[in-house]
Length: 131
Image (cartoon, rainbow, N blue to C red; front, side, top):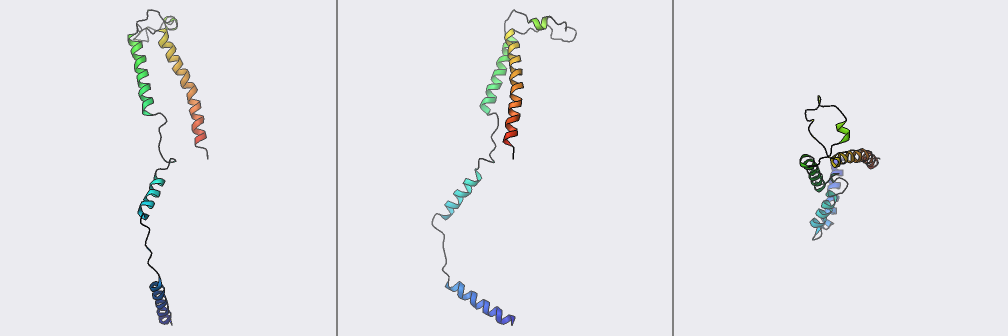
């Protein structure tokens, strides 16, 4: 009985396949499929974007180099009252190093900005990665 069923199914499949028309894809089928694949692979969700761009890093390096150059070669004759009141010559081998008021204010302003930006960035990334 299995042989009869197999022959019947074989004849039926030959008839169905023989009557079917061979379909061919459209002329630009490959091009349309590849464009859809390229659109999926360039998703903005998985693209890595650095927090600080290369131009900003270059600007930061330039600013720090300028500050270091100004502190090293600046010709300010005024002494910083904060450092002159302390007697730290026995600890500091660079005791003859003098800082100008501008450089002290710049360092303090930088520290203040870092203390403000760290909580802001932490809040930003916590909001970004919430589910």
